[in-house]
Image (cartoon, rainbow, N blue to C red):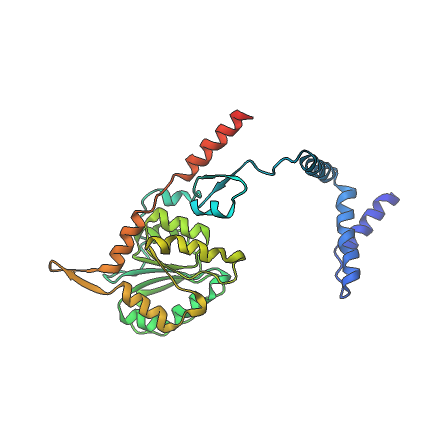
Length: 291
């Protein structure tokens, strides 16, 4: 009974907060102590984890024999291990054709999907709000994913061509049926754009670890399927000029078309797509047989 009371006291200490950093360490260690004393599973897992690390260090066993890559060019950063390019598995919706959602603005103007939903994409939301009047005037249709806390009232003439959404499960349908995506450049987004063969304006998050978002964006920018805009150099003028350039109308054999946008689409079609799920399963099955 006394032992149980001591455990409860230790648990209480683990939930305390302190203005003194040294005492806060005491409370943190109380939490760890409580878990060690009361959880036999955790103790077993910890023993095995420490033992595995020690054995691996003594026998000089590598932590991994192979690394599966989402992008081919990642192997330049992993020179000391074997790599296999498998691509990145996506949501099932991206592997089938989806109709355009009925709530999307109707009309003949180009359809833009603006993904400003995450906390790190506030700069995209802001530049969109600043350029909204210009976009409506140019007859763009805009679906703006703004996130949970970024809804903003707007007062623009003919705003029937602009719709805000906190969130949507129909992102695959939107990307597949739009003309251009404006977004950050996380690995998931890059792979979704490649699968949908969709042109984009990418604005990398400038504080991403090791600047990986800019490196991601460079994959599509180098192939001519995307325009990369550095957030530090982004302004209302740069954003609007970029869109005007992409959607500049040219005439060819009496037919009007967007020359640069069409070229970007063609370049996206030339990116090698890979069935990631099948590739990963193939290698897992192979390694299971080996072991």
